[in-house]
Image 1: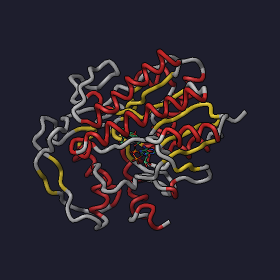
Image 2 (image 1 turned 180 degrees about the horizontal axis):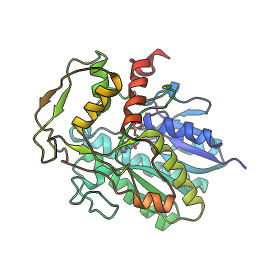
Image 3 (image 1 turned 30 degrees about the vertical axis):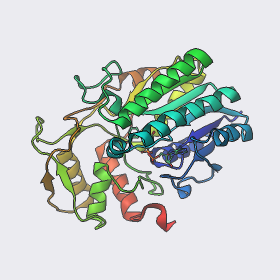
Length: 331
Ligand SMILES: NC(=O)c1ccc[n+]([C@@H]2O[C@H](COP(=O)([O-])OP(=O)(O)OC[C@H]3O[C@@H](n4cnc5c(N)ncnc54)[C@H](O)[C@@H]3O)[C@@H](O)[C@H]2O)c1
C-alpha cells in the first residue's frame, strides 16, 4: 500500500524539494504550512493544508483528515540566525512550541515516526573537523539553541510516548531543482549563494564577503554545501530506517567537503561566464572559521550518499535565479 507522509513546512525551500522526491518515489504526500515563508506555488500535485503549528487544533485536524499518515517530516521552523538574536521569543515559540504541538498531534493519532530538520548550528564552532555527531553541543545562536532544544523535547516523547525520531543536522543547504521549477525563494536572502546570485542579477546593490583574514588557506570561511536534492533523498532514507525498526538517532548531512567563500565565487564565475570582483567586508560576528561534516554515519546506517557537488549546486541555483528573478511571484 502507498504510504502517506505529512510534511510540515513543505511549501518552503528544502521541504518543497523533499515533497517532489517523495512523489517521485511513489509516496502520497500532505503538506502542512502556514505560508509565512513558504509558497503555495512550490507545492505541485499534493494537498496543501494552510495551517499553523502554533495552533494545536489546526495540526490536530490535519491528522483527523488524514488518518492513514505513516510518518512525518518536520521542516516548519523559523530559520534566520540574525533574526533569532534580535527576537529570541519568536524562535523559541515557533521552533519549540510548534514541535511540541506536532508531537502531541502525532501521539494522539498514533503516528510514531518523525524525521526532523535539525542543523549543524547545534555544534556552534566545532573543536574538530570534520564534525561527527559526537561533537559537543555549543550553539551560538538562539536559532541553533531552539533546534537543539526541539531535539531534546523529541527525545522525551521517545521515552514517554514511543515516538522514534531522526534529527538530520544539515550543513549548508543549497542548489535548486534541475528543471528550475523550484528553488530558494527566501526573502530577504541571507545565505551566501542566493545573495551573490541576486547581486549578479541586479536585484541588490551590494555584495560583500564577510572577512578574508580567517586562518584558512585563502583567508575566507569554509563551509560544507550540500545540494537540496541530496537532502531530500536522505529524509526518505531516514523514514525507511525508522519504519524498519531503527532507534532514534541523529545524522549529519553534508558532503564531507569544505569549500571556501572564494572557491564558491570562482565556481560562480566559471558557471555564469561572468567576470566580476567582490568587495571584502569585515568578519560577521558569530561566524565559525571552518566547518564540514563527517557523514559516515548517514552513509553506513541510512545507506545514503550525496550525489552532487559544487558545480551542480551553482548551476542549478543560477538556472533557478535566472529563470525566476522574482521567486514565485511570477507564477
Ligand atoms: N536552509 C538551510 O541551510 C538549513 C540548514 C539547516 C537546517 N535547516 C532547517 O530546515 C528546515 C527548512 O528550512 P528552509 O531553508 O527550507 O526554510 P523555509 O523558511 O523555506 O521553510 C520553512 C517552512 O516552514 C513554514 N513554517 C514556519 N513556521 C511554521 C508554523 N508555525 N506552522 C506551519 N508552517 C510553518 C514556512 O512557511 C516555510 O514554508 C528548517 O527547520 C531549518 O531550521 C535549514
